[in-house]
Amino acid sequence: MIKKTKKMKVYKFGGTSVGTPQRMGEVARIINDNQSKIVVLSAMSGTTNALVDISSLCYRRENAEARQKTDALFSHYTKVIDTLFTSEKEKDNALGVVSGFFSEIKNCITDDFSPQDEKKILSYGELISTHLFHFYLRENGIKSTLLPALDFMRTDRMGEPDMYYIAKNLNTLLSEHIDETLFITQGYICLNNYGEVDNLCRGGSDYTATIIGASIGASEVQIWTDIDGLHNNDPRVVDGTSPVARLSYSEAEELAYFGAKILHPLCIIPAHNAGVPVWLKNTMNPASDWTLICSDGGSGGVKAIAARDGNIAIKIQSARMIMAYGFLRRIFEIFERYRTPIDMITTSEVAVSLTIDDVTNLSHIVDELREFGTVSVDKDMTIVSVVGHEIASDERSMDIFAALKGHQVRMISYGGSSNNISILIPSESKKAVLGSLSSHLFK
Ligand code: ASP
Ligand code: MG
Image (cartoon, rainbow, N blue to C red):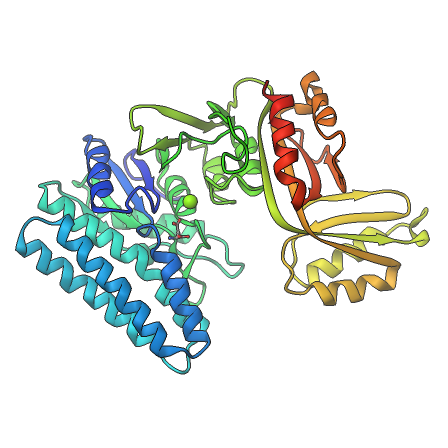
């Protein structure tokens, strides 16, 4: 049994929340509230994308361009440092640390650039933002302790967070600083099972925050972004969406997995397992509480709609399925062998339709499926998920079908969970379908 350290909160700030010196100042004000906490930071906005670009140049052996892009990013940071700090002493110190990180990035730019070098390069965004923020707090008289994420955050053989290792190491680290109340750490980055630098995939800082929250038995996790919580439909696609006040863990898990961009797809799971409530908050509007995600999702009925692009629908049609057993198992085994997760599935007596979003082994999968019957593949599909508590028993859910009138629907799935009705549509009709669902369901 792992001994939990004293009750703390976890606050996570995304890239835009720490995207400029001025925004960092606002984050400093938000966290300076005398409550014991771990602050998880993303890289400053734009940085991870720039590091991804640098890595792509390295893969193409365009090393001169990669170095140029690295210099441009460094020069951006010299300006950030100049504005963020007042004293020459802190400026010099920050410049020293950040130029050290940039030399390490440059050391990775070689002719035998590997995925391992890429992972290393990607880790510097969070290393830079957390060091700058820690120095900024120090210059402003706020005492904080930097916890290196690579000292406790680790994934296992399956690439999943090694919760036992993380809790053990993090709680040990915290117990070495028993009198401290403010800790800063990097989101996103971790070590893998081999002890190499790795990450929790794009947007992974949310996941870091909830993994930490679960590991220390936090009283709550606050995820701070630049929008008023989770909206009832995708605000980038549909006008007039509004924030949802409350969601259950299961509802939030489905929304995050099926496209609600505000959250990393897996980040609710650790909070759910440990029963740690998650608040979504807005740095632009710090006084308001927006979405609360906890065991009690409040009211029933439809809560929100999310959409996820980039899905492929595969249909296997075969008269051999009639009255046969073991058929689905053999189909699923093919996907298992190629380590390709299936998201949606519907069956009839003579056909199975399912969706995947990982196309790495699509051609091999299709070749093997052909042994069972006729296989057809539809690309550019969007999964639209309508999420709520016991939504099929809610009368208003039937409005979903009215909303879909006149639109092409490839699959509908209900019953796998009582929280979700998923609809597969061609991506080109996403805007129209989401708009129609909003006007029918949230009038
Ligand atoms: N910096 C990483 C990204 O841009 C992780 C995060 O922001 O959550 O994906
Ligand atoms: Mg994010």
